[in-house]
Length: 381
Image (cartoon, rainbow, N blue to C red):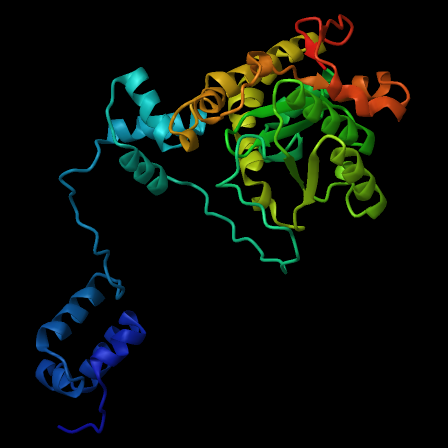
């Protein structure tokens, strides 16, 4: 029987497997169940027709998954659940999860296996980022720079709803703890300095630049420092007058400032990534235990020492930043550079007095004790 229908099953299947099988069933019906005629009209084989009929009985015309039913070398379910729970608890990367599994459970897995386990158990999809038009910016060579030649500076809002829970945010506000964290990271060694404040202001931003510069200069850092910052108002923003004055000020210390392009946080990638570490390893596990400024200072000082001198950084070959500094730098640094006090900028900027003499800060190389500001440590100017 000739129906006048000339279709190609392969072409239909390339468009939609489900539509191709629907066409098989319709033509099979028109040929009154003649499998051979249906196969001839669609230029396919009779087993393909039988498969379509079987799928109709199974109430689904879609293709089945091609994944194997059993995987001989798949990680056991109990081990995989421990990896997932540890990831949810710590939010560590694959290499650090590997170390934790060995220490806590004596489970030995490669970091590649751990990465795959985390990926297939991921609950949220990565958000697509909107691309913005590029603007001019001086080139900064991170990879060939020496220690402290490029320092990234940024401001972090501590009570970030994406990182902290509502109870943690309420705790910070209830006990009147600092709301902002000021950071500076050397891109070569990942050595980090931190300060805190309740206000996000240009005065605090200026104090932060002076503090970072004076700390580095008074501990043996003599190279030309390039600071990279975003367009926050606390760093001058779009005010050309503030940027010009800031560059004049920093030039006297042998420093220079570069503003990153707007909507390009990747240009401060090292410091932006460290903010996640701050949340995961300091604020989230410790903030509920802190109720006073003295406690906050103690915890922040301990965390900063841990970050610079104890924590193993994957990007540095699994060694701490300070050890990397001693291993790679040719400049003799004062060993006390690792004891960085996390200063409170609101108090410092207010008690510096008149701003006419701030340019002499880095010239002093002596310790002094400020019991009212830092009851648990020293400050070096």
